[in-house]
Length: 302
Image (cartoon, rainbow, N blue to C red):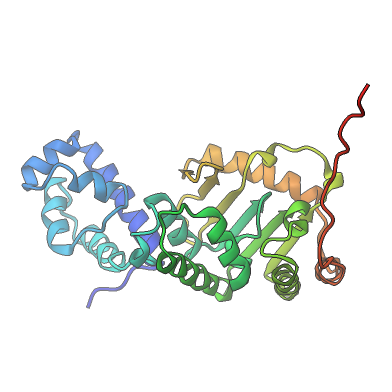
């Protein structure tokens, strides 16, 4: 019986597509040449190499033969990766999420270490249902139906199961504005802050606050998340969000190192440790029922 490959479906698919691309390039074959030889559609191999779809064992065997892979151990290793990568997490939500975000969800569910900086809202892994729905309603275009928004909420709550994985570590840095802004109103925000206090008490969930007094920093341009994996051959993963709703995804080591250094710089200046749960509870306790509006007096005439 074949020995299953280690790792989640997401990491196995990434390892497989990386190996297949390396093998194709070593043979000096283009994607079009492979498609013609295999009698595939022109888009099939690009989608496999991009991780958009998996590859069946029946398709992989002749592809490896085309690449000249004859070593039985190597063939079996790659076949096991194909078997293990067929069922990717969250694929049932592909009608509401684009490929980059589905990749993000797959990596999030597989990462051994997660580091996230958020200058705008509470990270999805830490959100209560009420807070999450308030964000979903604010962020999603009007073309999305209420049913689709409910499915987004369902997916967001399912994501939080990753916090319970044995051995995985999470580091979150929240800008102070994130915990001051009343998303969903005072009641929703109080519940969210109390939830943060509970989560922050866990030894493997490190939640920090970057205070207003910390001043300007390069990361204020937008949120970013870094993933590291237990498998040595897996490259780290960088996910950058922007206000247009699109994202940049990278497995380039230079990008990862640059953002990791940014994260460490923020961490040095952040509030952290045992005082964090107390801060969340204090802010929740003193939330005003109706926060005062900012008001600027008009210039006086004459």
